[in-house]
Image (cartoon, rainbow, N blue to C red; front, side):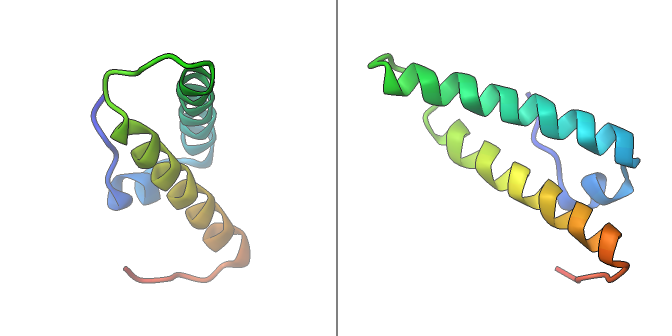
Length: 72
């Protein structure tokens, strides 16, 4: 799955961003449950990427709600 850039996330509508958030969170839960149960995953760094993407989406949502704009 290609990784989203910050600019792409900012340009998404609120509905698409919320859907992407749910999708990423579901994938993160699946991967973490696999590792906690003793299994191995193909790309362990994917967990870190997912956490960062989720944090970015939440940051953008809070920016939109507060009306402010934080530059990179």
